[in-house]
Amino acid sequence: MVHDWGSRDASFVAINKKVLTRLCEIANGKDDYVTVPMQGSGTFAVESMLTSFVPVKGKVLVLINGAYGQRAKRILDIAGRATVVHETAEDAPPDLQEVEAILQRDHAITHIFTIHCETTSGILNPIEKIGALAALYKKSYLIDSMSAFGALPLDARGIRADAVAASSNKCIEGVPGLGFVICRRDALAQTKGNATTLVLDLYDQWANFEKTGQYRFTPPTHVIVAFHQALEEFTAEGGVPGRGGRYRNNCRILLEGMTALGFKPLLPADLQAPIIVTFHMLDHPGFVFQHFYDGLKRRGFVIYPGKLTVADSFRIGCIGRLGETQMRDALAAVREVLDEMGVTNPSTKAA
Ligand SMILES: *Cc1c(COP(=O)(O)O)cnc(C)c1O
Image 1 (cartoon, rainbow, N blue to C red):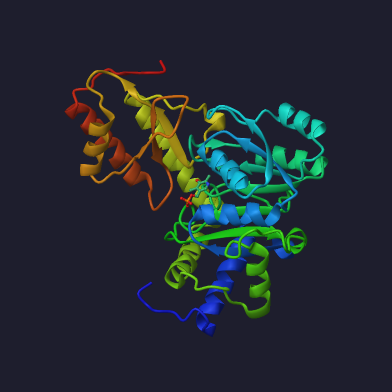
Image 2 (cartoon, helix red, strand yellow):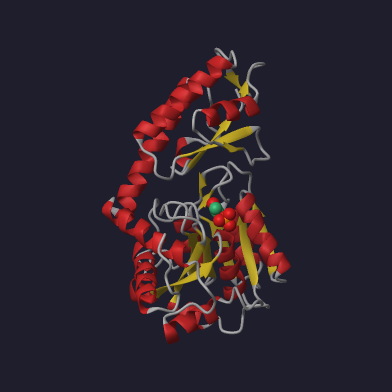
């Protein structure tokens, strides 16, 4: 990252090409899929996917169970694309019978959008089953796999997704600054003219890569070179099984340790993705979240406030350059901070 790369120089173009090819392999895309990168954070990739794949006259069935589903709906509203929403609580996956009923009822629907791991709660959504419905009713299938890509298996061809969006800085452990969309070539080829912005036009971005191997506009060169290195390390760790295995172990240690300290997770084990865990706040007069947060931060651990409407909660991540040692150290810090706050024998607000 300390080297200045020329964005139109052959050395950088070659590194970028390796990154795009590798991303496609991770999704089992083979020759049927192509990765189109989009400068910016993950939301830039999601907005680019939605506003390039969904034509102005399209209609999207948006499956919502958290803030990122809400954000996709907002993107589509702003872009003037019609939507129909199926929303479930933040701790509940979509109701597939209801999804099917909507598809039978509303023939104007052209696309189905879902989130792979809804990071708001950490819930794993059933992308294979939703994909089967999309295939059965011949709808284009679009997925936000931002917080799961690289850690949870995703077979884009197997589930017949038209597009999957993710970014450099979550489970691949690169630095922030690049989003990407893994697209079925045949579907992408039909999106010409759909986009309603120049910058986020995925088709135009792709067409330019096909022609020149280069970005249309200045890419974050340092970020992409770091992303290349992150992908090498991802491969060395054993790809999706290796990375996902480490996160699953982190998640198990975290759940066991926090439960022993009196915390209760929001989700049952079968809905919990090994990405981020939501815990209920403790119901104890000494437990003040800001003090808890600050005490952990002083010990070198930054956690994440809750984003839920269904429960008073906070979140702890399992992803990033973390292993067993860091998770155990974090649990020791949690115990120390609870002691400091005088919190003993707590119960949770949900209990
Ligand atoms: C992180 C994330 C995004 C993108 O967020 P940015 O802040 O734009 O990178 C989108 N969807 C999900 C599910 C996420 O976890």
